[in-house]
Image (tube, rainbow, N blue to C red; front, side):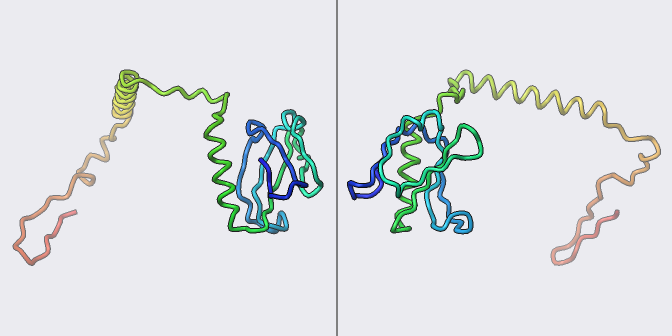
Length: 157
């Protein structure tokens, strides 16, 4: 990452150092709209940075650094964010334990979920009973009467 064309501003950052990136448009927390990054401080110590115009702050959280890119053209902020999103897609989280299922595994998982759902419904049916004093018909479905076209049908409740 090299912000700016000016050779006096230089930042080399290996993307896996970036824990999170977001567009910050809240000027009450920072004087300019910017791209906000949280960096893994342990990894960020290996980051090479030249020029004081790049602000790196140590967070209250021990192993985090914060970095903000405030661009001269705020219109380019969204493009920079999208570029970081692209970099994130090239570096999947190593701790992510998501493993895509095969078609057979997906089908088995769907069947297991359906069986669990049926078991839960059967259990609910077994514990839900209507007491005898409430079986006087007050909760029965209303009866519909046939009506002629153009007239309203009345329901007995």
